[in-house]
Amino acid sequence: MADDSEFLSHLISFGLSEKEAQLYLHLLKYGPKPPSLLAKSLKTYREDIYRTLNGLIDKGMVNPSLDSPTVYAAVELDIALDAALKKHKTELREMEVRKEELQELSKQQRFRPSEEFATFKIIKSIKEFLAVATSLIDSLGEEFLVAGPEIMFVIASLYGTNEVIKKFMDRGGKMRVISDISYSSIESVQQVLDMGEDIRHYDKYQGIIFAVFDRKTSISAINVDIKGVSLHEPMTALWTDDPTYANYLVSTFELLWEQAVPATQRIDELLKEGPPQA
Image (tube, rainbow, N blue to C red):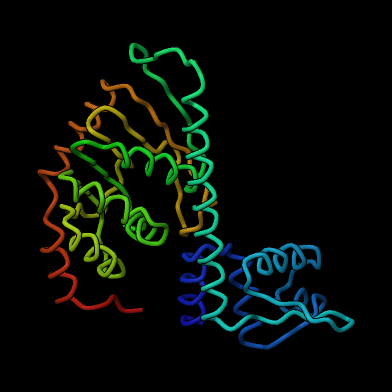
């Protein structure tokens, strides 16, 4: 049961919903089944099973048979995960194309200048957050500050944000990050440390999750409960170009930075302690 829980947790962190993870694992363990038996085994309704199956088919993780009655089989794990990852990357590429189209269209418009006024926008998903953050990093000149959960290292690696950050740092930019680092995130944290990011560990950090770009623009979480790395993971965050609010977040960051410890020190401690006992 403990192994199942760990396997399910990793599936969910890869972008599956809890129901999709349970159904996919069930098919992996017990082989192809029709919806009626799946509903009985998982103690739910057929309609619920059909919805979940459709989600897994869309992700390329389950295949229906051509026989009647139809049975559903789990795609081999490596192939299924590659398909799910490919789908996420395709979605990001589509957003990049739309971004370029909008930028080109904006050049043809006569928009009123807004330098004198602070603007605000609500961000509603990880997908939207990555699109906004990537655009801001592209135009960064000097500094990028972030305080947030360790899962952001996985998200940044999985969806190409690290490549954008690397380009920013290659042109002389500086990035500092505060996070609560655990044993499971050592590899992801080490990757960005190798890129040159300056990271510090703040034990059991429960404060506001935020990012500040060149001390002018910021994104701060209003309501966030990230349980996985899906692009569609819900979140509510505020984007604003109000420099007064950005400076407030910078002051908060500096106070936390003084209290945090270097990530290398934290990683050494975790490696000495070893993985947590199940």
